[in-house]
Image 1: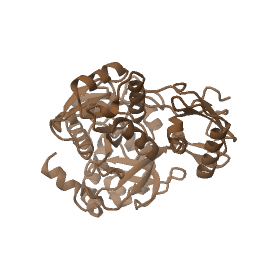
Image 2: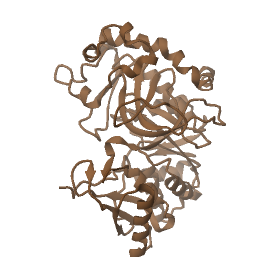
Image 3: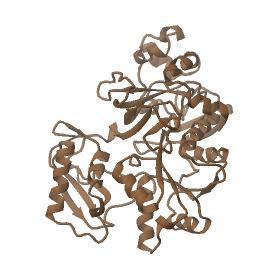
Image 4: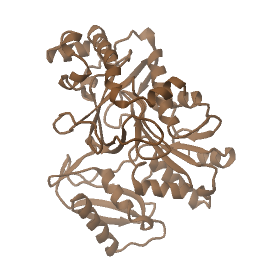
Length: 439
């Protein structure tokens, strides 16, 4: 990390919008000049010049960008989409999204875009306290997905990176045992699976060399029950990071004080908070909840304006002992995973968090099985809860879990307890909702 980066992260946050205003205005001018997609979108909103758009203080009047809007502009002539703003001769990498919410989308980067992404990722992972010379084993794929940028960031941080990739549990655990890394990077659900896999084979992960676990890729690393389970299983401190492929990898990173993920994109990306139901702005203040919306500030290949992330977060603005001044967040869940059970909004991750409070009785793995297609569900909502290894659950435990969910989340469920090892694990993003029974 450069001294400039450290100074930037400790600068007063209240001044950030003013610092970013000139870059934002220049980005709007760039979009109007180079992006057919945004020329059309903005003109429909009455914006034909940078002056019409104004500064960052007026950004809330501009239209949102939706992933489906971008996807709709792709064809054989425009495989990336009409939001591409740089000639292909200037593109140095093209990633694709995982396609977990639809057809994969292509994400191009110029050299300067790539450098900015590496800088953001460096800030995010440096916050966790990793230091040059440490060995880090990861499941992040260097293939088509934007997580590959973290490989560049780890090198810049001076880490000895041991990339194993997804789907290689035996190879990863062999690396842990033989190469003795101090850092593990993967999704929280996979870190849990690794500890279970190891325990089945008589391997004590708590006695391993791993002392830090950096989780990303899905919500869960910030859930108290999941975090406690991982920290006890590995004897390691857990911090989490979060990004979004269309904007930048690892936009948020948690410091060693583990009280939420600091925004790591300042100066390069602007974020807003909105009410996901109405699109109305939500003030970024302590305790606020809403959906994150992002705008690039100096992107060249395919900049995005007011891009809806669908990530719902809770904000913390209280000072942090690490000295970073940017707001922190915890991810509550994805708004496109939301279920509405008789008028009550329910995030699958919230169900997992409540179930996780039952500690040694459960494995922490759940599966919600809606009976109807679509967001709206009629109670009771079926939920499979996996028991911990060696635990035989009965009606009393199921009733207690059902009541706790009812008391905490105001939703009536039907709890089915299943034996340990019944529900699937994933080395990538775990799926908490199983739609196979929905009609």
